[in-house]
Length: 146
Image (tube, rainbow, N blue to C red):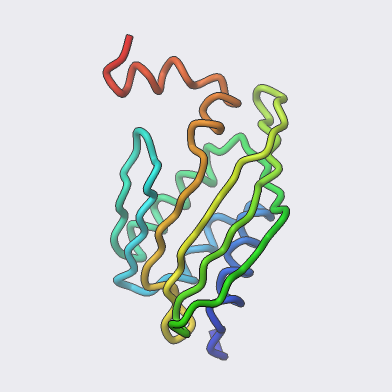
């Protein structure tokens, strides 16, 4: 990136990339040593460290996601720390496999330094995504349920 983006601008690029399905381009928004925590992730890793690991994760999502995600109701809040923003939004989700359409709430706390995400705490409604995809039984089984 030739210019240093503000935390708000970085988040907007991230959200635009996700909405456009450009998952393989997203890792460039993260610092080499970035840490991403997906706090409510029920079955996958809740902590991903490093741009390379994030690039792998985004590539896997790009190859397998059946979701079309359209952001709505986006609110970006500045904090007392100029590197930190809190973003709240909904995704209008269309699941291409099941045909289901629904909304999914999200909150993300981003720390952006020198135009790159260094830390992200993500609060997404993974349960709603599993239910819409018909994957709730598999999720329960993966968590040791019946």
